[in-house]
Length: 113
Image (cartoon, rainbow, N blue to C red; front, top):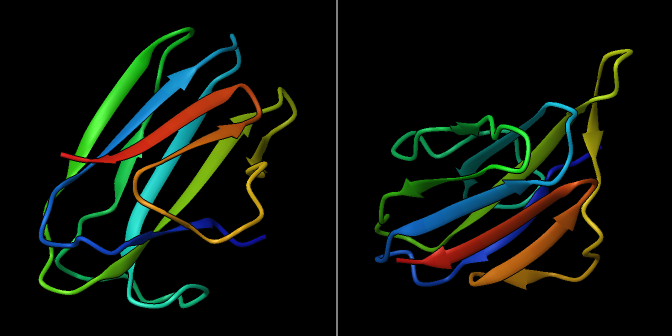
């Protein structure tokens, strides 16, 4: 299952990733930069972000500017009690920053800052 890809067209700006957990079950949200969707090679200058929001907690992280437009790959993992599973975004179209997503029990906002 592929991550969700969000186009960062204004790459000279920082991007803020804000996550709100709406359940008691643990979640992990990961994001990293890629020059093309569906490619496994991350952009080395963009560190992978990993967020662990607590129950009903909102957490945020900033991704620094980059010289070239890129795609932000986002995956949400959910602890089902029997192991971790990847949650699927309810978004099916290509999207660009700024954008809001709904995953299973997770709200995700990606904005320029």
